[in-house]
Length: 380
Ligand SMILES: Cc1cc2nc3c(=O)[nH]c(=O)nc-3n(C[C@H](O)[C@H](O)[C@H](O)COP(=O)(O)OP(=O)(O)OC[C@H]3O[C@@H](n4cnc5c(N)ncnc54)[C@H](O)[C@@H]3O)c2cc1C
Image 1 (cartoon, rainbow, N blue to C red):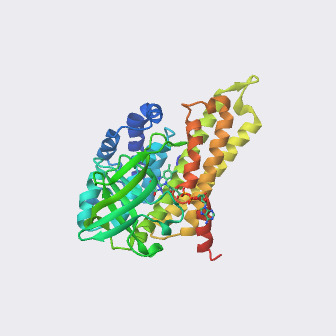
Image 2: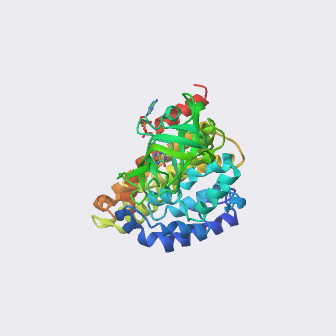
Image 3: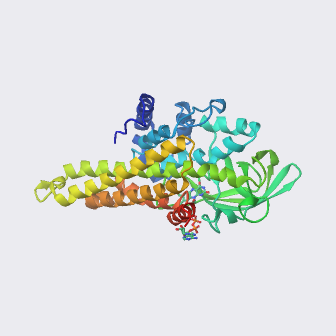
């Protein structure tokens, strides 16, 4: 792996070392047990908060450490090493819940919510997707009706990461008329009467909690509105580039884990009297994986750099998300094939990653939606 200059400085490499040690100490030894248990301990948030992991990319004034997109790529590369996307999705669910609050929220809302989440004392989730549909965000149906100093929220959200455990949920609600101009973001807190949740069992990401949320006449203080009423879509858009680049970064990192695991296995495993890696067909699979990872990583880094410079290369970020997730689907498939039966058995990283590929090409904007968005941006 070894990403180098021009994008990575000594400071990035120091962060890499720090996160690598954290992962080796606090995550790798227990990841199998957490995956089988379907959750990781809540105490991991506090540990990650203490070493500053949760605050990377947030303002000093809110308890974070300002960062560029390459700090995030480094963190993802290292968190991916144990081969569990669930740990990244769960531990970093604030990465989609907080940015709209940081960008648009009132000072008091920011000060109340962001610092405890970055310290790992509270958990934050983002709830946009509804049972009736996730891709068509502009048509969401959960309503929030103003009544004095409160909003009354009615509706439901589903597939929400950290949905069961979250203390703060940034919820997309309809406060106005149809379409994207009638959407607001409202923070619903854990003990709000009328707010209930049920867990969902999944194909992959087992250690990350995923839930359906129900809002039945929930009274939410109007002070929990994020930014202006009916301007929520702006907050959602604030997430798009960051979330899609983060998903591409995860896809590249897990592709690399597949390649590393497959190379190690191919060198060790003997069939017909020779190590697998001596077979041309196997070597070619490994080179095909490395080639796709190299292309996706180069594009990821170039776009991360442009986003870091304040550009919004929307079409390319959509295409990158697809390229990187297709790279992962290819690499996971080939890695499992190279492992043979062992690749089908629980406890192998490649088995787990294979089950986790689909969520990355569906979540954060599905592959088809990414193509439509790119087409629109290209004027097609
Ligand atoms: C494990 C997991 C975690 C998640 N975490 C969160 C979370 O934390 N917060 C959150 O809000 N959401 C979350 N999601 C939801 C995710 O963002 C949605 O699943 C995704 O946006 C797709 O929405 P949908 O599932 O409703 O699919 P649909 O919108 O019903 O689409 C179904 C399929 O049809 C395709 N499709 C839809 N419309 C079109 C069209 N016009 N043309 C062509 N094809 C189309 C889609 O690409 C997709 O392949 C999570 C999902 C999963 C699986």
